[in-house]
Amino acid sequence: MGFGYIKTDFNIRCNYKDGAWGELEVSESEHFNMHIAATAIHYGQESFEGLKAFRGKDGKVRIFRMDENAKRMLDSASGTLMAQVPVEKFMEAVKKAVKLNEKFVPPYESGASLYIRPVLFGTGPQIGVRPADEYMFMVFVMPVGPYFKGGFQTTPFVIMREFDRSAPLGMGKYKVGGNYAASLVAGKKAHELGYSNIFYLDAKDKKYIDECGAANFFGIKNNTYITPKSASILPSITNKSLMVLAEEMGMKVECRQVPVEELATFEETGACGTAAVISPIERIDDYDKGISYIFSKDGKPGPISEKLYNKLRAIQYGDDEDKYGWVTVI
Ligand SMILES: Cc1ncc(COP(=O)(O)O)c(C=O)c1O
Image (cartoon, rainbow, N blue to C red; front, side, top):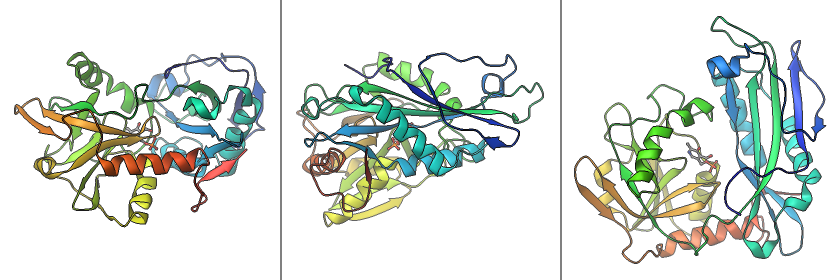
């Protein structure tokens, strides 16, 4: 099992019409009908989320920080003038999708999990550039394999200034489909060159680090966890959680602009997000300047990255106490 679409038994749907959300509906179909002039397909009125459910040693299923995903979808909806899905409705749909597909939540020992994909989009017709009057919110799930098949490992990333992910005052802070369409060419080139993903710099000055592929960046030095502050990156829920855990571990946490040259000073670096928790970085090649920033020579992640990774996973799988109320047991 890798990370790909797998059919499960049920998905949850909810329609917004005449100014109000309807009831949650359970569907067994992988398809739906949509108007040919729906704003989702013409003007990109679309937003999605990604979160996971984990089966613990005790057999219980835990969903990680779904209220945070619900709130982020509220922001994405306001950034694209879509109808907002109330937090309670979002969480009810997620719980329902997980419960109805419980048999697809992989066993504890596998290190795999159930990926949850909520999606919101304009279904109502518009041909002028205007928001739709009708929307659909849907949640489907699929089992996904462990991100690191050969154990927790480092991979190389690349800086390429010919690509931007989002504009300084643009849509980067929202989880909207257009940002991912805009990243496909850059991602393809990075993969073809043997990198796990591209490292984006701020689009205006190309001076500061934004984020890496579909993940936030962090660097570690002098017992400090440092992560970029930027208006054009997605506020990662994993990053937010790691900052709390870093503080708990006695580290200082700094969320501030990170100049590219500062890469030379970090002891450890990583990309963080729902998919991997932490994807530790082996090296970052500056493609345009011919410089390499090297963080690991033997493929092994640094000790602090490993500790943070183990700590967050232990909370997700229910091995450690959930001090912060991050998990919902189903
Ligand atoms: C662009 C981008 N940045 C960062 C992240 C990491 O966010 P999270 O930790 O909430 O998964 C994601 C993944 O959702 C992403 O798509």
